[in-house]
Image (tube, rainbow over the protein chains, first blue to last red):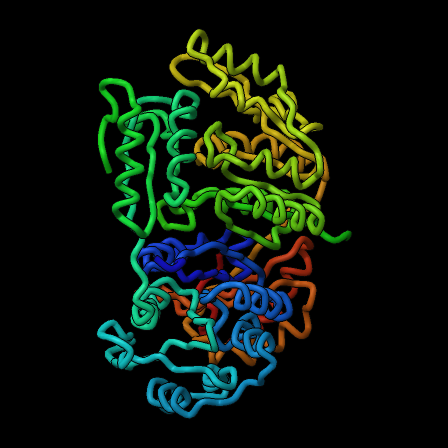
Length: 260
Length: 260
C-alpha cells in the first residue's frame, strides 16, 4: 500500500488566538480527511497578518500534498488570506467574472466595490462548483439559492471561517480528494480498567511488533466507565486487527471491558 | 506601554489530528493569556513524534517569550513530550525524587516502573506547586488529595492533555505570568445590521487612523440577531475606546444595534 497523501491545515484569525472564538472547523475536516485516506500531520493557527500567512502557506503547501486554509476570505481589512496565498505563489490577484456575477446577482442594486472585491482571487484559482460532486455547495440566504464555488489555488483549498459555510464547502474538497482513491484509515479500540503505568509494558511489546499500526493510549477522567482507551489505527484493516488481537491476548482475565 | 509578552502553544497528539478528539484546552488558555496581557501569536498541532516535537519546541521557544505544550506527558510509548523538550534544549532526563515520591504515595503497593517513569523530567525542570499562588493544583482521585506540580522547562510550560488536569494546572501558569505585571487586553465591540461589504470603507478609515488598536469584523450566520460584529482590542483602554467611538460616529442612523 502506498503511503497516505498528507495534508496540513492553516487556521487564520485573531479571534481564535484571543480566545474569543473556539475553532469548530478543524475536527470536522480532520474526520473527513481521515475517511478519505489523507493523513493530517500538522495544523497551524496564526493571526490576520498577510506576511505571516504568506510564509506559512509557502511552507505548508510545499511540504504536504494538500493544504486547507480556514478564515480570512471576506472583504474587510482583516481578510488577507487570498492576497497572502497569491503572495506565497508569486502571483497577483485578478477579478473573476464568475464570482463577480454571483455577487451582483446576490446583492442586486446594493452591490458595491466593497462586495465585489470578494471576486479578486489569486491568478490560476480553480473554482470548485457542484459539478465536482453531488455535495457541491448551494448557498441559500434570504430565499435566494446560489451555487457558490470553493477556491483551489494549486494545492491549497481556501475556505471561509464561518463554520456553517466551511462545512458546506467541504463537499467540494471531499469530491476532489475522493478522486485520489486513497484507502480510508480504519480505527479500532478497546476499553480497560487498567491504568497506563500497568499497560505500558504490554503496549511497548505490541508497538514493537506492529510498527505499521498507530497505537494510542488515552486515560479517561474520573467518572468514565473505563480507565484507559487503547486505539489501533491504520489503512490496512487486517494489520490493525492483528495488532489489536495480539494486544488483547496479553491482557489479564476480565479485560478488556469493551470494544469501540 | 511596552509591547505585550508573547506566547505560543503546541498541541500534541495523534488523536487531535485524526479528529477523534476535539481540542478543548486552547480556548481556555487563550482567554487566560489575554487576561494576563500576554499575546498568543501562534499555535501548532503535531503528532506524537519526538523529533517533530523537538524541532517545534526549539522553534517556538526561541521566538516567543513563553511556550505552553499540551499533551504527551503520560508514561506510555506515545507520551514523548518531555523527552522531546529535553532534546530541544540539549539536556537529558533525570528522575525527580519529589515526583517519584508523589507517585509512590498515590499508587502505593501497585506502583511500578511504568508509573515511576512519569518522574523523569528534563534536567533543570522547575516544579510549580501551589506555593506559586492560591490556585495551585491539588489532585483528588479516589479520596486521596495530592498537590501536584506543573512543569516549567526554561520558558516552556509542559501540561497534560486531559482537559480537567490541563485546567487545574493553569493556576500555576497564571501565578507565574501574573508576576510579569503585564496590562490585560481589553476588548469592546458593537453589533450592526450592515454587511461587511458596506462596512468595509468605514472600517478602512478607522483602521488607518487607529493602527495601535486591533479591529476585527465578524459576520454572523443566518438567524443571529445582528449581521456583523465589530471588535476593538488593545491594552490601552483609552485608545480602544477612542477607536470604537470614532467608528461608531461614522455609522448611519439607527446603528449600532448593540454593544458587547
